[in-house]
Length: 124
Image 1: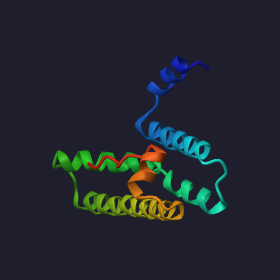
Image 2: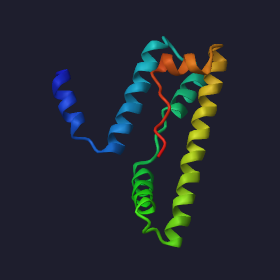
Image 3: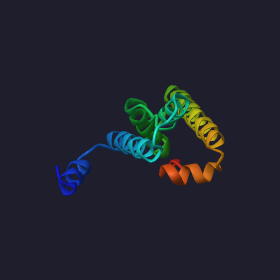
Image 4: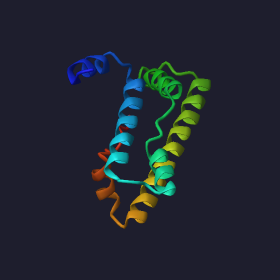
């Protein structure tokens, strides 16, 4: 498959699938840049590249839209807070894994993020 064909297929992906693809591609790139990762690094890289489950991401987006349109019910507001907490916990675990990997490699967190091609997630 050519790069152009691949990009055409990528263009048709949903937002959650695109996020998953990007995370997996970054994992492949990181794995190639590190000649052989010890098991601990591999575990940390997997945690770093763990994405938000698509169904959780989708539900959060729906509820956030309702919140923005001021049509959110009390039950939905509670659900939005719960999902937000779940997403925040995933982010904390990811950041902890990044900090631990940076420490293992004896580099700064910003250097690690640059090396792995990681960016701060968009926050809505």
